Image: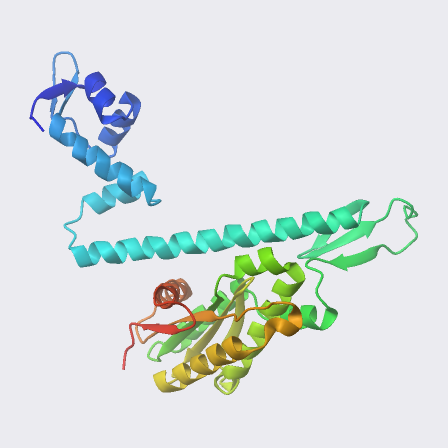
Length: 321
């Protein structure tokens, strides 16, 4: 490409980006004009700068914001460092995608539930709604309560006992401050292709898969969870985590292998699912951990690595022996 300079309007036309956005790039120090006419304020760009525009738009396609791209392009990155950044973005997007998928499935489930239970619905608490049927508007009556998702009471009560992520993060941060020299471990288990399970077999079957997976995960880590600084958490609909301190790599991997084997070997046909299911596990442990978010972020990266290997396996990230 030649080094001819073009006024901003002409450059915008053949680069495929608006003049307004080019001015915005200039403010962010992403793409500066090759020259600026001091007398009239005209911006001039080189034809070679089209490649810079393509690079920015390519990174935007991966979900990077303009501010993130500005920081990226300002660093002298090696290929290895750039790959780490891309993997971090992959982990971030995966969490966002999982959150959106869970919200969509819950919404679809609730739409089905409301369709079968017409009437006025009052929000009570997480996953609980009060249904007042059209012919039961006498305020002296006790409203009928239904749960969403509609799983049996035993499953519902046991899963609700599992700590949520907010309390879990507070617990970890307190533990880190109390034991700065200890080895901290985070283990995350995620059911493989869980969204498709709900799609093919329905929400009740999906609920049973979550519950059965939880039981296998809890049982496999039962001995390790006896330690006072250990904790089990339900991170999302089909994702569970375990926090441990000063636990050996061997014991952790043994527990993970047991959980994966039990999930894969379990006969889900009895719940109407005529296929083998599996899970993936990410493990991160380190002495140098400052915050619960770091543990979750790094163990999620390990989880993604396990799924890249083909699922139904575990991956360990940054082990400090």
